[in-house]
Each structure stands twice: as structure tokens, then as C-alpha cells.
Length: 267
Image (cartoon, rainbow, N blue to C red):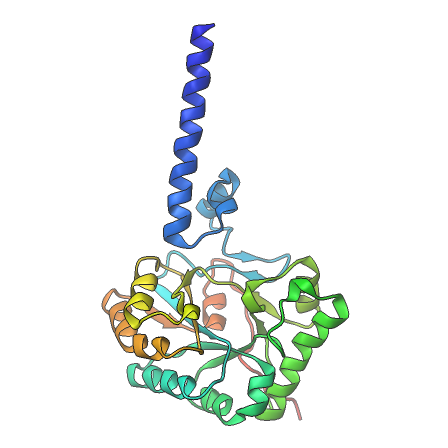
């Protein structure tokens, strides 16, 4: 009896240790806790199956065997932060993927045209920045499609990448996005700049979590982001990282996925 109790206690302690280690990994690597404590996730990660979900056309992470990252910037375009971000990217020769909001594109189309002119990629962040998992199917379709309509009016091009606002989505939203021809993109490394924090905090938040294949999330909202970018970009370069767009990252997965970057309307 005592032997069984000791074995049971050891099992409980082992599970607690695994849970604590997984929780620490979750905190340091911005993972979902349910993934961190799920043994099947680690099997999928070891097999490199956790990067792209082909069923839902859903990108979570880039190729971990490549020393590259994708810089993504949400919520814009806004003055004065967007021009400042574009200036910083141009100075460092870095291309990013901007996920833009349709209603903001309608107000400032010149900023989106500048993104394209300077070689950046642009994705859909919905028309009104509504959480897609709170909408019905028709509303979800409208939020995504209207975002593309306003982008097309401004640029003559179309959107093929989607990041749901707040990265909030459900099966319905993924079905609609896939039916409209999108790849949905999450993130794996955040600067936490949506809280109006300092440039130092943004840089530190990214650097302590970045790894091969990280999808870095920043926002075109607060002044800390453009202030942090020059130092962040230089440090990531110093560490040997190459910057790629999301479409480039998709094409460099172990099983490549090819998406046209903002295709022009056929004439």
C-alpha cells in the first residue's frame, strides 16, 4: 500500500513539475497555455507540424530551421505613427507585413500606397476591427470582404492574408476566410505595444521571446513602436535574423504555401 502511495505521489509531483515547466515556457514564449501543457502539441512541434494548419489555411509560425522572422504591424494606418514606422523600416532596409483596417484605409489611402511602393506586404485586419468570433457568418463575410473593397479602391490591388482583430476567431471565421481565398495569420512573439509602453519595454519584450521563424506582432497605434523599431531591427540583424514578409515565410515552410502578394486586378 505504501509503495503504491509513493508511486502515486511521484507521478503527481512529476506532472506538477511538467506543468510548471510548461507554464514557464508559456510565459516566456507567449504560447497558449493549453498548447504548453499538451503533450501532443510537443509531438507536433517536434515533427514541425505546428507551423501551418492546412485544413484551415492558418499560419502560426515560420520555419524553425531558418534564421528568419516576419515583422507584422496591425491596426493602421494612423498619423503620425505609420509614417514614422515606414521611415524606420526604410532606413534599415526591412520589409514588413502591415495588417490594415478598412475604415482607416479609406481615410488615409496615401499611406497604404506608400507601403506598397516601398516593398511592404499588406494584409486584411477587417473593415471595422470587430472580433470575428462574436459575429454571425454574414457579418464575418462583410467584415473581411469590405476590408478588401476599401483596399482595392485605394490601390487597385487585393488582399490575400488575414489577421483577425485581437487574433480572435472560431471555425466559422476560418471557413469564411478560406472561402474568400485568405490565409489566416496569427503571431508567436509580441512587443506588447498595444498598452502604450516605453520603447525599452517593447524591445525587451520581443528580444526575450524571438526565435527562428517568429511572427513578431507590433501595432501602428502608440509612439513607443516607431521609437523602438530602429534599435529592435538593428539588434535582430546583429543576432543574425533575416526579415521576410508573411508570403515569403509561407513559401519557405517545410511544405511551402504560395500566396500572391497583393495581386493587381486582372484587366
